[in-house]
Amino acid sequence: MQIKVVVDFAGSPHVVLDKESAIRLLSTLAETIGSSRNLSESIRIVSNFEEYYRLSRKRFEEFIFPPKDPAESLRGYAVVQKLRLTKNGGEYVEIVFDRRTRIELIKEALKKIGYVDVTVERQSV
Image (tube, rainbow, N blue to C red; front, side, top):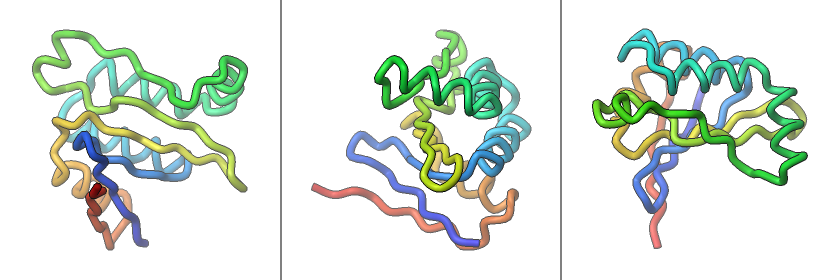
């Protein structure tokens, strides 16, 4: 399988996955770097997709920001910056990673869940 990781202007990597793959990716990251509140809340949000999708549409919010503990942010354990839940012929999740999250860590986790061809693309002006 093939996937593209897009790094935006601010340096935050983005990846779009179906709901089940997103849960597997976040769980793999939690196993790799250790569990944090940020990752566990992100997994909970994606697991309860329908509820959070409905809530975000009701509030006219495009993104959901998983809570982060300040201490975990300082140590670099805050991995997910925000999530976008979409229904486009299925349930999809755009994960926007914290800009301090290493691209190699994301690529390794994607390969562990079955994505063989992982390409990284940087947005340019």
